[in-house]
Image (cartoon, rainbow, N blue to C red; front, top):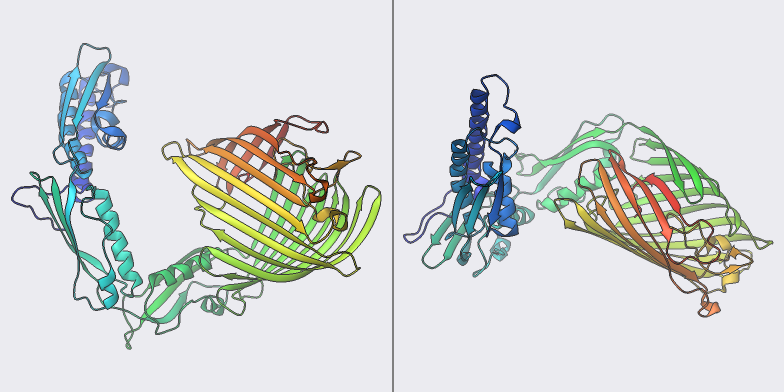
Length: 612
């Protein structure tokens, strides 16, 4: 890495490279020196007790939040307050060592005219170290040049730096920009680009910086044959079906990353890595090497939960690579006081196309809630297609046989239905997301073979996650859900297909299915539903977290006018215990504006995973 100096300036500071190494060595040296002095002062082979040293506090003025935090994390004076020096002289030596470190931090944030002064007030008890920072005006780019050697491809001429003239100089942004440009070059078919030179000229008189970055794209490449290593039971053909390119196609880094994500998302592998072999074949094509380690073929899971309906349990059996071609079979049984169910799911990845999966679901459920009694069984087949790594669509068909009793009316239904769905998901973590969003849309047309009215059931849900405070991992989570039944009167829709609200997966603080229209104190369900949830989540440590939340929602029937349309609200708090398989959640919630039919005013929920 090369930097040059202008006649009127000095070299730009890049902490992530040589200066960071020098700073690290300086910190280690200072720490070892302090420990050695403590040992000598105590006259023994153990570190002197902290109470025997010169205690002091640190006050930082003029640095601002970002720079102040960097000073706290990088200087021995701040970091080693818990290891006070034996004498004031040792404290001053510690401060002297940190002065150059702070100047380097100033320059790395673009303050090349900055100044710093460290002093100690010995009259206070404990003593106080004052760090006075004068940042001055930040330097800006006067010129930014991007050079690519040889320009072998016209597409490379269209690569431009996002650093602009007049923009403030920040060293970390320069390194991030270099990595971005390298990734862009890789995406244009050059797998091994490198930065060959960075020239930085700093003009202190003008407060300006000239930056030049020069890259060598290397040789272009095309995909060669795929070589697979590490498989035991799984057939190679399963992996080859997922390959999104043909031999001879231009190299594309994103295609390789998408291929790797797709294989990892199958759940068949405990580890997997896709790399380009740097040694081309005789025809100049670059082989792709897939190194895979298969997971155990079988997994058994047992779980327990507690909610407003009482305790519950679940058991699951997962059989992977059922026939050696990546097929997966999931069998599950679940129980709680109002519902008993058994379900099976067969998944065939790479169905007719590498981006498609065939999913067949079987379900049998017995439900005995305050709203209705239902016995039902269903089968559904759906083809899911990944349009992009974040967007998936699905289309299918199914059959449902049910018997539903509500208000002493016993009805039987035989529905064929045709579901469609679309999902957008860019969350950073499925079990405990703190960034990103997820949007789920699902609709199904139901036709009753016994002659009852057909209807369309549509549901839409959006979730958004944002990090608010990185240090304490304080994040927000928002959810909005809507549903609509159209095409038939509410009386013609089976009670177990109507919308209900209230309970652990809906509006917490309310009893299960108790929000909405009622008759003779029995929940009727509705043809319209709206719900929202807002949570603040904090995880200050590796294991324990906290949450406060507000839920709201209602269910109503369009034919009943304004009856029972008012929103019901519930609020509460909870703790999270973060485990290797996801957060264990315990919430307590209270209804803020309950109806007269709400009996229990305090609800408890215990389960695995966040509420949404």
